[in-house]
Amino acid sequence: MLADNLREVSQRLYSAAAAAGRQPPLLVAVSKLQPAAAITELAAAGQRHFGENYVQEALRKRREIPPGDGEAAVWHLIGHLQSNKAREAAETFDWVQTVDRPSIATALARHRPPARGPLDVLIQVNVDDEPGKHGCRPDEVPALADAIAAQPALRLRGLMLIPTPHPDPEDRRPAFRAGRALYEALHAAHPGVDTLSMGMSDDWQVALAEGATMVRIGTALFGARPAR
Ligand SMILES: *Cc1c(COP(=O)(O)O)cnc(C)c1O
Image 1: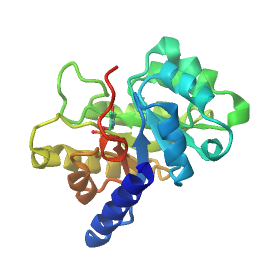
Image 2: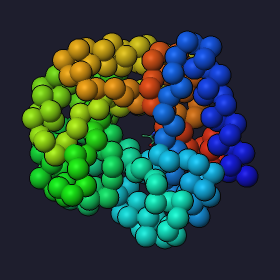
Image 3: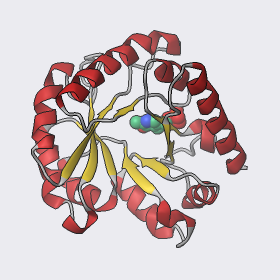
Image 4: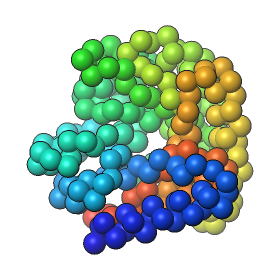
């Protein structure tokens, strides 16, 4: 059944990308609050990239996933990261999409086990410049990017953003467009940058049209999330 959802979502991503003349975006399956069995099922259906919001929950679930299909999984941290969790995050994840300050970049670099190779990171940008929201300000991106690029234990891959959740996804388009402009500027300064992570279950069409190369989709794949 989850395999059917995966097929349907992938097909919609492919046709929307083709219609826009773009490459299909990389699909990150957001498995927060979903049981390990659901991850195992989706991995068996061929899904590789999974996104988790909480470090402890991800650690616990990874231990529950039996060897096999889950071994190929690539793990993305997409929730806010506190400094006291940096070590576990650097050990557990393949990507951290929520780097929003130099101190967290330094902490991740210090704790990344050398044997794992560089940690792929995205800068989370508060593109609407909304007070109280996670993510750095748009004008902080260049300096933060330089700080990340100076760490051999980190690999700067791009930007991640979550627009203000206006009820009509169309009203999020300006935020996606602003993200795209920041991404282009970042790519010009750091040619290794190749990822613009934006778009969720209810707004990925708009995000894709505005240039997303990676979408983070939970509900449309797994169904509604159980309560925390
Ligand atoms: C939960 C979450 C998603 C997925 O949301 P859905 O609406 O279930 O697709 C994507 N990105 C982040 C950062 C999230 O926290």
